[in-house]
Each structure stands twice: as structure tokens, then as C-alpha cells.
Image (cartoon, rainbow, N blue to C red):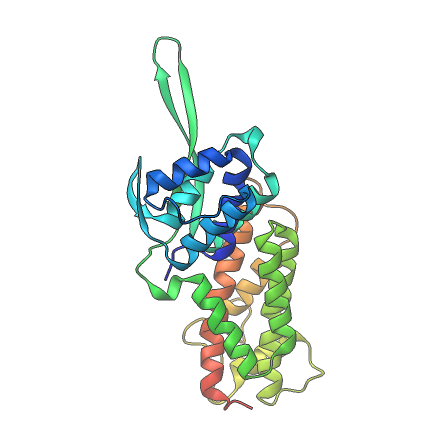
Length: 282
């Protein structure tokens, strides 16, 4: 599987296209050993063909930073784009896509002249999570969750999740957070309803119901749920974390939204897998 999703790659190409000329793209083809494989009828067609090659073939290419797959090379090339020559919309989409793929972009500064104190800043790509643990692949998690929601006809939670991911992809952190909160609450409500809980009860009572089932759906011995609210419990703790009051000093909106998306997907996959064992598909 590619490290980067389609939106990330195409957003990177949009950034490149707006900061590079037609001849620059021709030179890039030659440098990467793919000369003649792209249309020359227009720059937009040229960009589209580069995207096709990166997404469908993704060959290894030689760059100043060594040999790497073409999709990563495109992203690193986009990170070189001058601030005044790039589309901010495409830039934001690329950064959001990278976070969903488990990467972050960091600014690095080096001293170029010790005498005068001159410095140069540039962006570097860093992986946020290990790349060899399948359970931490958030695109894979999203696909499995959507499949399980479809299997059990959880239409409303699925809609909230899709809206959350869409908002995250366009950098609308507040909208993404709001949809993730509703998604988290709604799939737990639907699980409780399907396992026999009174549908008129509130969400907190439904989570209590899931902990009191025999056998329990939420595990007390794992500190997922406890009748005593003074004791640590993950499910309610995460619910509280998803409904904070006020802002968090020193915490960026991007970092917070990324954390919420990642922890929500990991938790949903765990609980929906568990539910799949409790309840046969409709």
C-alpha cells in the first residue's frame, strides 16, 4: 500500500503546478526517468498525467535526498514551493492529508553564515507513527469501520464519520471535531439500542447499560467502564475529552484535530469489531 492517499498526492501536485513552469515539469520528468510519459498539450494535462503515474505506478525515482517512491518525491517537491507561489487551499489540503496518512510537516532552520548569522528555513516530512504496525494505519481503519457500519446498517454514525473526515481533509478542524464527537456518541447509542437498551434513555445511561450487560460489552476489568464515576474509565474519559470546555493553551487546532481523528478511529475499530462478534449482521 502507498504511504499517501490520493488527495495528498494530488494536492501536492497542485502546489507544484502553481509554482513550476511547463518546462520545469519537463525537466522533472527527465530527472526522474519518466520522460515522454506525460501529455504536453497543457500544464493541467501534464499535472494530471504525473498524478496518474504516481498513483497507479509509483516508480522509484532519484532525488537529491536519495531514491524514493514518486509519490513521496512529489510531496517533498511541493514542500519546496515558495510561500508566495503556492495555493493556500492546496497547501492546507496536502497538510491535512499528510496528517491523516500519519505524517507531519516540520519547519527546520539551519545557519548558512556564522559571521552574519544568516539562516535558511525549509520544511521536512516526518512520520508521526511507526509504519510497520498495521493497526495504526488510519486509512485502513477508516475502511474497516465504514464496512462494519454498513454491515450493521448504522447509517447515521457513518454519515457523521464521513463528514468528519471530509472536514478534516479541508482543514476545517472545528467541524471535524464536532462530527467526531457526534459519531462517537451515535455509534455507541446504536450499539446499546440493538443490544436491548431502552431507546428513550440518554447517551450516558446507554453507556452504563453496555457496561452492565451479561456478559458486558464494555469491560470493567479493562477500565473501559465503571458504575463508580470516581474510578478511571476510558469510554467516559474519551467522551469528556471530545467535549472540552474552552480552548487548550499551547495546543494547536491541527494537533488536537489530528489526535481526535486518530483516537476516534482506533477506538471505533476496537468497539465495532467487538460488536460484530456480539451481533450477527442484519
